[in-house]
Image (cartoon, rainbow, N blue to C red; front, top):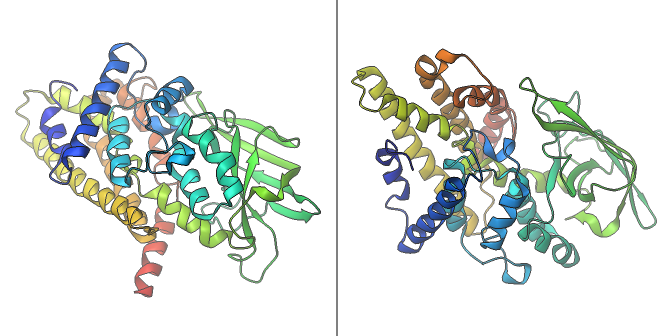
Length: 383
């Protein structure tokens, strides 16, 4: 923790943390500080997507920090989602390299626990907990924009499973992944939301081609994935055939409701605090005060999502609201830092430059703003 951070960080434990959660938070901070002092990583914005380090993820696994909420028979700790929130907050606050395990731990494991067969759970979950199984998401498709229901990738039933053909795009870490989550159309229906099914796919299967998509900074996070008559065994169906839309909407609440939707630019916020240390700039002081207050509210919202998950709910509306407001907060951190830290321009390797280059994706991944507003409105109409 930097010398200028305590004013912001001291409130991070907050009155909502029990003694056990405060102890866990302190333990995670000590681990992170040890790794950072040993030069294991350099803090960066958007670390949950852009900082891939499989050895770091495996060390977290050895420390019991993956699959924390899952049953012990799969390698979990049967902890609460609030405890997991404490861990993920600290990792993101530090800008730690967590991209290798993030998708699997955040949403694929919980989805398999909710909808997977016993055989699928036994096969996949221990590998996620040990960081041996890394997942990518086969959701978005070319020409579909943010309309996830416009899935063209098809899965046709055969005697012992399915044959999948189609294309997925913006698939993070597909070039590293051992497994993929796949949303495919198994039946043509009048309503585009019907006839969708979820699958778990081995990424080394014959017929899968992964092509890099390199960003403007020359970094490779995204990919296009082509499925050419790929065989998927019957036991790799996740949940019910044709019920994929209901399941994926639920799964997106795990994706949208976490602290990565508000802490992606936290390392930049700390850099800004360091730049302002001792400054008498009244306007900037007010700006930082406003950002701090908004951060406190957003963190409380993320706690509410975690509590709902602990109660067995899939907080679809709450997660969509958190993502919508959290993404705006992340962009406002960049705008606040621009006058001071943007003077060097958008140099890709600067703290400001990394946050700026990551920012176009904030409102797209996990659902664009208009999609989130639609989700919120539809949930309100059901009340």
